[in-house]
Image (cartoon, rainbow, N blue to C red; front, side, top):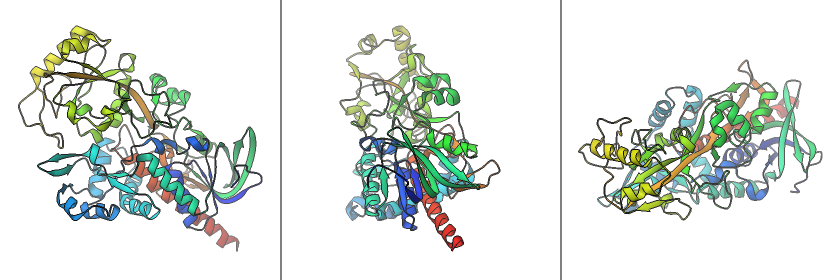
Length: 504
């Protein structure tokens, strides 16, 4: 369709064009709604944060035979040589509650977990292709591929592939999409949403509709909102994904009476390459700057001191909260240190040309190349090596190989850093999305201050508050977007049908 909107009218308008938004649009269309997707970004920068993901997506898959339904290309021989621990709804829910310290809204968490597998299968029906997450979630042991961490699934071709599949399906279904179009205001009449106002080339245009799905992300790309709600230091955080997630949808919802919900002072953040761009580079997508092998490292700040237990848990359950710990350090930087024994075990992103690395044959030479307190840096490594206890190192499980007598301890994967060459990877904090949003029910309907649905208003993805607090299990953001995107779109489509039935 033409990108120009003049006097347009639709059943459902979806704001945003990422994973949650397109799942919403597809689901609403499948309910019979006439759907328009409104995307603030230009076409070449569309896809939201989903475009930048590495595609890992968490689901309560149960056991390998369900994974084979999702990926039928897995051969019998490959299945025989695959060890994949069972991971059911109870495991997923327990992980959610463990990492959020029991704060996740039980109704929303149960919906996310309970609908995760059927949503993956639905995505596959819509043309999304998946593959095993071998590189980052498994090790080969005795000729068997051993998966760990409840995250064996990813979308083919990462986030680029995911958005390509969803966009192709949207086009097949005849869903209209306009770009360079910023939604700025909801129209509410007689306590019902009746339209949305957008800006196109500096002009305001009203689109008439019966329902709106807000799925245009959180406020992580809004520097002032980060400072206001998360903390002054967050002005310095790098934005890992799209520059267009500035809280527009949240502000629009609040302006018509939506209820704030969730941890507005919290966010998903990670340790990322120190030389990462300030906002996501659409020419270098795929989450290539992250540095997630830190459980095998020790991580020191410029003062030469450790500040977290790198081996507290499997990477999937700590990476989303350790970014803010790096942000607290002087100059917002830390250094992951490895020796020649651990270097071959590092994830694929450490081998890319974009990875910043300092290498030396001795620790003294390595530290001499870093802008750090050199004596303390070497002393910390020495004390760490002396604190490492005996035990069998196994990176695929929490091996209990730990330290004693130092603070913070290293609870698992404590191996000495003593054999050169040595490697230092400088990292800083990258923010992914903020945890605060609006309150919805489990079907994606936006709730007002009295916990009642605002007629015609739905939300999905990072806009929903109350799911993540402080941390999250890896891959949960992508599945949350898909689950609540499908639910919100389905609800919006049914809402339109019910209105038509009532009016007739």
